[in-house]
Image (cartoon, rainbow, N blue to C red; front, side, top):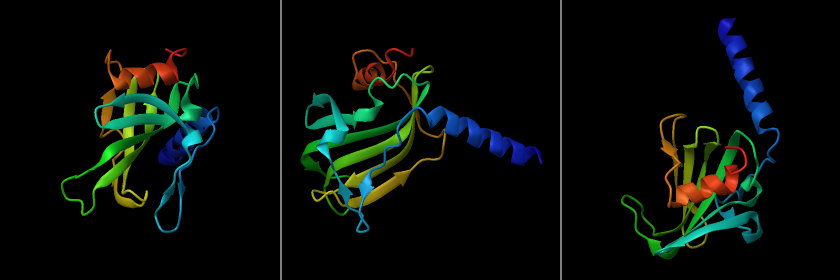
Length: 151
């Protein structure tokens, strides 16, 4: 009974936290192709060889916990160890905690030049957490874009 209560309470808290943020989902076809809509993404930074974007609905959300979606577009396809095809882009999903200034990664989707998913990597909750409070980095730029007024 104690576990059932814990599960129900956790589900309630999770749903309450994410109620303020519009639910964003990648449009993935049955053939594992991601339909990419440029209007859904906010450019964060350009670096040597790649651009980083976050889902536009995250900008200035002012929530304590934000569902995180990012997109990394490589200028030249990248060879990754263990993958048959070069990777043109990477889609990232996770949970951003504004108050603690942390990002918990939950999934990466690697796509080829046709936006077809060639590799998926999932992480156990709390197994891959990175600090966003690193001044003069892309992480810090993302933290400011999403959480600036809630920190």
